[in-house]
Image 1 (cartoon, rainbow, N blue to C red):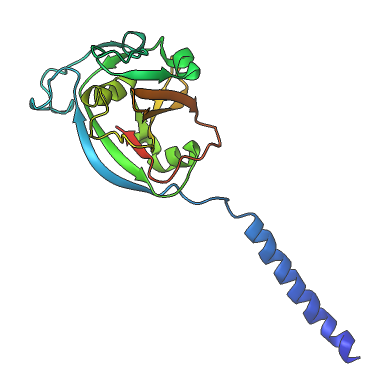
Image 2 (cartoon, one colour):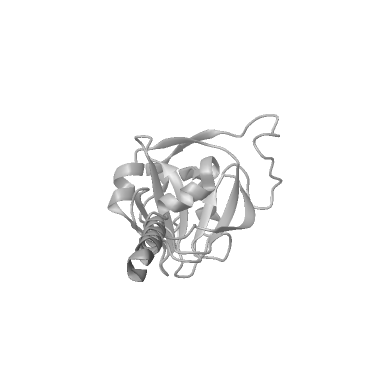
Length: 204
């Protein structure tokens, strides 16, 4: 009789254990991107390095011009190249070479990735401020055309940007210094590729 009396308690314990296990299974997988804000970089295609920078919001006359991606992003490691680029990915060329943007003065925020995370997790943490422009990337590349030290990392850790392609779809652009020149690729935001800890992210 004692054994039968304990059965309702045992059933209750098992039910609670099963609910707890189910709740654990339904928890989101992976960790937050955990972005650590780093330096803010002012960059302009209109001014030479060292000239005063006025953010677009405070400029009396906005400094704007057309930026044609295909005229700038080219594989070229000659000493005369405006930016040494040793490799352009096929996806980048297909999605971005035809894009035309308005080039303006940019104030970019840099972040360091504290945990391995995919693009969706990173953009989820950045929110609406996460997007950049091809002109922003080119502006930073020109400051480190030959792999000099600067805002962009020049070790084996990538620099990434979230940019809309010629069709208006958001993608990830990564830039890595390869020794002879910059290597630039592109991938979908929905890719499950995990960007490594220490990846530097730039946004407006």
